[in-house]
Image (cartoon, rainbow, N blue to C red):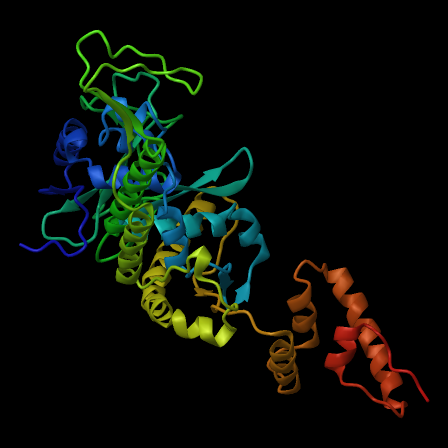
Length: 456
């Protein structure tokens, strides 16, 4: 049976009865460690640049790494940021066809969190996203959950419940949180439990009922993980550590031949002279192999994996002039096409996440948001020359694609509404002056120059 993008942490339950659900939860807690995916945990370490020593030290004898420290430069975060361009620019979220500032203020750090989620989902193949309302700070907060177990009713394709591990005060006993949705008249459940199956209430929720009726967890899933990026990063770190050891040993290993036992204890140093017996010899032996060839082999590994993931690597010593915006677009064409295929995935995620946020805010009596929700993902742009940029903006302004306000914000996105009004009022006064001037200038030129034309 093929497993097209399915999570390895998938648990089937026979029916929605409380007894069947709780039994599945207990079994999940007992089998949690056995089901953990080593590749996933390794990739998380490489993405967050943590615990890297333990992944490298196992490939070297302790005597080797006593000579140099391991090389710890992971390329995983850079690959992930380059590949996932969907949130490179903040997405514009529209409620009822308009930007809702109240919701944007409530959704604390949403843009940075969803970008991190997109990179982890691409790397791991699947990643979950939990919404939570902080009553003390009156805002929505978000948590990324890389390792979540999903519960399915037999025969269904959508998860009925979720569980995930949380930090435990007792290091000998793991703790988990369980969420299930309301379905077919059966109330959803929400509680903590340990690996032995004991349940605990959360806050004042003594009845262990899910107050939202839906699980506050959304997810992004790709059809495959990108563990090849993690693996090549490990190969690079191992190879670079080997290169560092090679550089260390290039000084040479002193070797004596023709000496008897007890005669090899000699003090090294340029101020010491060695008197060797007849037939003995002394020299320094260095490792063979070219460091340049080893470095080129490392680059080849990185380039191959980059190409497999629709990416390219520009090495620092490549030289030459910086490519133009159009040349960059051509070089990134494969990644841009892949981004287009990502958009439907993240539109579905954004819709699921918004429905959860909407329900949470409604239950906490914060605000009732409209049902209509859409997302405008920012277009990917490449740098233009100053002349190309002016021509492009001038054409858009003359054809009413952008307004004077848009043009001002293009050059200074941090302008306040008051500053914009003052600037636009000044432009209107200048337009009146231009109408009576013998040397008229375009609105575009006046906005750029910030000056009024002079009369002759």
